[in-house]
Length: 115
Length: 109
Image 1: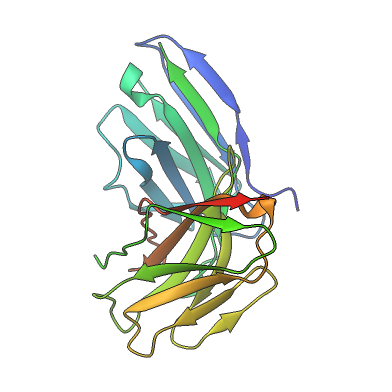
Image 2: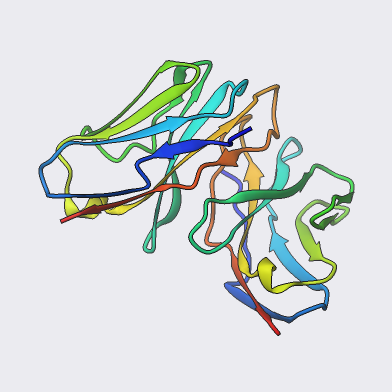
């Protein structure tokens, strides 16, 4: 298996622009997670989906952030408009949920820089 | 949410065992104890997890205190490739996983 695939790996954009991060989970997994990592705040869970349905989005910073999972093999995290404080590494992870304690598999991350 | 406490950093010599402690005094009966690690410039990766009994796998061992208020991740022979940030995490909900600051492990040759 190729593991969790994220694209792009690096993104540099200017303040105010729309940014879309993409994730392909491991085939057969039914849960997908978006995390953000910064030096100041560490790793934060933004949102997670189970069977393509958002379960908990309490970690989403504000309305500028949105996430979708149109099917079991694809998810996007969109920031519109982007701001310099959104600069971070964004990780996507997936797991097969069967009742608790499941291992999450992380992608390599997207390093975002907003100028 | 149940929280964990880990030392900010630890050092080890190559080829020696490493014991990484984690305190979780407010753990509930259904919380699993998970350990993940993050190598430089990579996403976190699973190391091991347990509920009540000690666990072993090819990467490490997990020793869980009888009262479950603390646990220790044991790397039997540290290598330079084990240098990473190690996270001890309690699974509060089925899928919810909250990372703390972790322990940065430095391995000296």
